[in-house]
Image 1 (tube, rainbow, N blue to C red):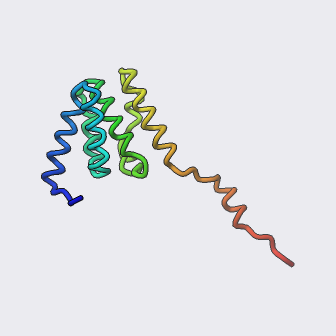
Image 2 (cartoon, rainbow, N blue to C red; image 1 turned 45 degrees about the horizontal axis):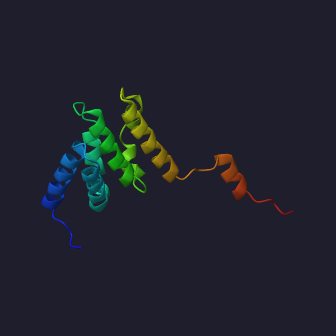
Length: 128
């Protein structure tokens, strides 16, 4: 597949946003497929839109679903946002979508063992 120009990516992103705004299951599904094709560079823009105060909860949920689809492997892009705010949203649907995003991030983030365990595994016994 040929690399898209920035203008083409911007146009497709606008189309994705408008497709997610509409309450149409098939159109939303196509938009989520397009999100995966556009990839992680649009994560930042999706999150900025999801934080916009004037959007309806159903649209915010669909934006969070798009972020959740893209998130695995790109948690560092999401970590700079206060996504905990979605857990405090008045809408139960938004809170549920926020929990799903958190769960996806936790599942993809490697868990580090306690430092004491790491140090103990590297310490060797002195042979006298």
